[in-house]
Image (cartoon, rainbow, N blue to C red; front, top):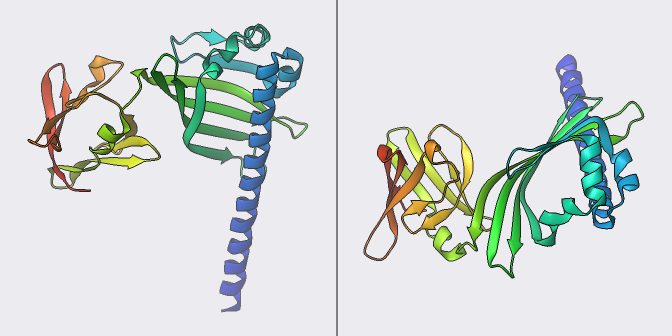
Length: 245
């Protein structure tokens, strides 16, 4: 009994220590990102340089271009890196994974980023991933940045998107789940994959790559979705019937 108590106390201490470490890393990453934003706004390459790891890679979301450390710093000094920051920028659904146990050395931050160009009545959504590494001096630095463009087009109709939330039963044990959360329509597919859904019209999903397939909805007389189907090359792969959320 005493041994069990010692084991449980040790486990509790270990979990508490790991939680504290994760919180410390999260605070350090937040401070680093704040310094990155200030350096970009000031177009100050000398302030940004010590915040980047060596080697460093930045992959552009628009076309897959890759910037080296030197290229990215030169671009930042010219203010070109501010292009996306001229729009109103918000982050959603951020997560931070920390690796290294009691001696964390790598952190991966993933978030959905919304850029709104109010003047042009357009918005863009990205899935952004940043990898941070801890140097021998104990400092955290940005090593990799990569974005994936999920949507770029007219301002989205929030009321329209919210209408599609619900579970769409395909067959026993398989379903599509759509959830309206934090101003976004989030999907969990039968495979377990998760993404954000953008509507091109009340009946069709807007997708950037046609080959991956898209959702097509059937509506009732009141314009409420009753079914969702995954369509690829005009072939229906599966169809789900909606139950109310």
